[in-house]
Length: 207
Image (cartoon, rainbow, N blue to C red; front, top):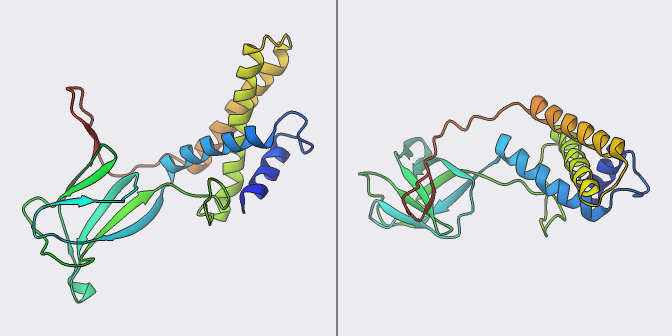
């Protein structure tokens, strides 16, 4: 589905096909929130190639990833590819890769990273394709509707809307939709451990 189809489905879940309550702008914002939540459960698996530089420390310029799963030193024969131990960290928005004691020789595209990146929806934020599996797209719409309802409940309270039943209904339905989303997708275990620092370090995250 493309963005417009997602928005139509979200309106149907909200029982608001004429957009009398929820606007496209509200639902688009809610869809972004749902997509971010989906990425924490089922991120998109991808691969990237980088050049070895003859050292154990490589700057992964241009890499946009949620995390790095595996690192391979590519050989002439795929059967001989070597999986490398590694330590990766992100600092000031740039990823760095430390291949421990193994220095990959200088070469073009001889390092392959298996990464997890954010999903996209065709026409959302200029994306050219939708990477959400078809079986999960309705679930994503449910989550987006949930976020939109919770946002509406908060907005009603902030605007001193005296219809408390309406705000409570949005809160209950929104919470239920998000609980169903999490339950049907299941928790995601990346198999990785991350570390954070509280000593003034400029490292954003590490794996």
